[in-house]
Length: 211
Length: 368
Image 1 (cartoon, rainbow over the protein chains, first blue to last red):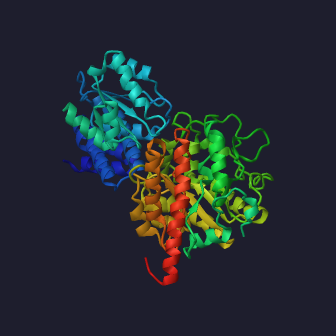
Image 2: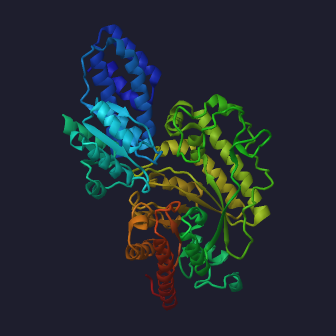
Image 3: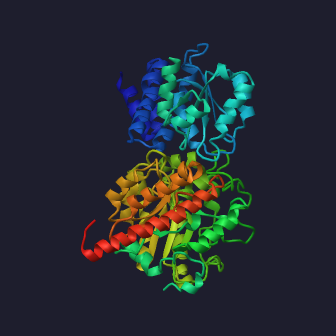
């Protein structure tokens, strides 16, 4: 790996946006393929941050600032990236269930999944079962991710699963659940397919699942 | 001194102000304290629960008088200075009652923040202490609500707030300064006007796993302000309570260093309570909150009682005390009233038992 790309990877966790952008431009001028800068510099750097976060040596500000720097740099790379029909690992639909307005956990999951090249549709917060069903019909995702922080709203995860059954599409999509009060027992009880403790575990589990 | 006539139905008289101070300082107390404080809002629970809970608190009066200072408005009317934002036309979505944090699209910009008058919220607001109850010999804690970190994300939204720590440190400090100035004025007035014994505020620094920010960032952006507030409070003879959700274990040494005296709630499933008491129990007292993620809303009465006994065993430090019991956050309407009753009754029953056992040991010179 060349020195500039190694530096892009390292600077991501420090949020050095201007320096990263300058290095990205310099590499493009040198003729380095945009895909190499993306994969070996930006996505590798994001993966480093995710690992450090999972180990407890990086924190959400580093994850968010890293993602922001990555997105800005991808804007520069975009015109140079070779267009393929669909380079993503697959589509995921995610939202926080009805009655719950917390979005930090959901946003972290989305960042981690995007960093693993999933195409993620974010339905936002306070999402009704009907909206989840509509989105599954519209986007035909491999996985539907449901998030909740509150004991008063986690029951709505089951409402969504029941609505998928009623619409006759439960068999077409895997359902993953997570959030502070959610446990493996709860996931089993409501008939979810996957529970993970945090965003990094979710992204890793989906990679294992989708290949 | 507690006047028993003021608590005619009490099955257990509340601890006195002096006893709570002794408990916090770790010089011993006859039993652990029980006080829901600002974590129970009876009026907001189901109507059928309200008379049961009112009777419960007549029989087991709170061991502290906990009250909010009057909350400044989020947006002031023209001329209102007791407000967090006096900029006309600023996005009214900040501080939405239903929301926790605001998203990037609706947060105010730093340009708007810079237009907010420096001396708001007005620390001279005459009715600031309008909620203070009559003194009755109990320990008095004035609750200021969200602190310096809370106000950063209230103004800016969670996602922005966390990136602001990197991208706009100067403004992060400005928010902390504004909140600290207001809290300091409220502290001084609380002593002069209402005979308070403690102040309290909340900053959720923890998530289910780990803190929101690194210890280095906390040291830069929040430690100096916490310390400034605690130093003032201590100089006036007050104690400082702090609420912090989630797992903030990595930051606790700095909270102690800053001068926090009592920490709430040591959230179960986020932190290991026994480990926290063992590591920090000599430097901190705990306003320990019984779990609201599982046992209180979903457990049986027997499970709540068992958890309460475990709770007493973990937190009560023989010969010292150092614990008050409450709920780990605001009690929501999904908690069965029987479970709240079971928690309070068992905390008193088993707490008295443990306290007496402890005193007996002390009299006989037995070290637990």
